[in-house]
Amino acid sequence: MRMGRATGGGVITLAVLLLAVAGQLAFQYAHRHLREAYVVLPAPPSALSLSASAFGDRQALFRLLGFEVQNFGDTGGHFTPLRDYDYGRLVQWLKLLDGLDSRSDYTLAMAGLLFGQAPEPHRDAIIAAYMRDRAMQDPVKNWRWLADAVFIARHRAKDIPLALSIAGDLTGLRSAAVPVWARQLQAFTLASVGDDEAARDLMGAILASEVGASPEERQFMKSFIQTHGRPAAGTGR
Image 1 (cartoon, rainbow, N blue to C red):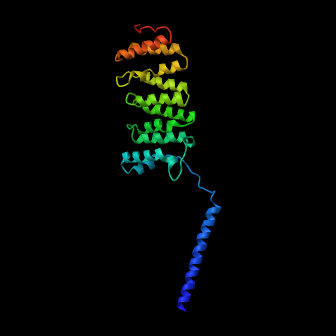
Image 2 (cartoon, rainbow, N blue to C red; image 1 turned 180 degrees about the vertical axis):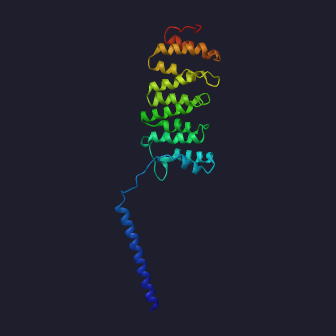
Image 3 (tube, rainbow, N blue to C red; image 1 turned 90 degrees about the vertical axis):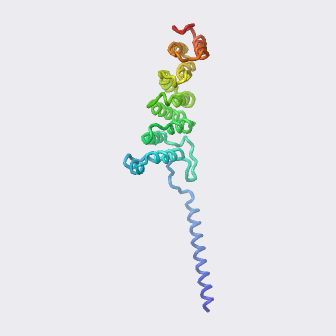
């Protein structure tokens, strides 16, 4: 008698369990199209929240948040194309990281090598402008990132005025740490849009002022000037 009651109770329990599972599956199927809106980039934290999160170790927070920013769109089973990012908010995050560590070039590397590869020119222009502002805080140290910003502005964003402006920052850097070719980018860009006179005159000015150029570099500059019209004054031709 007791065995019969126990067996009957077990059957009822199993039936209830099966009904619960079936109900859960039916609910999930009925609501399969309803998903919580996915936010690729949440709003950056406030200065007070950021300070509290650091627990006195800004470098640890810099590394943690840097990793999160790099992977924001590709977590939780999501894979987000760059065209779906809010680049205005992305720059806010990059500047927040810069505030935690102004000497690291991690944000510049992320901007140039990852976020600067978007398939839409206006997003690439935003990144090139950010890289310019960030790199100009120490332009001699960051000359390579300025050169990268010129490339992004010119070839990916198709923004020639922006490319020329950034290249002009490089042209003005008079330091042995900055290679001659980086200072020539503005002249190359001018030549690419058909402004031969400006390109020639600029290259002539670089040739006249670049005392550390090798003989090969000086010969290249003279050839460039000759190719783009009459020699500029002071080229030594």
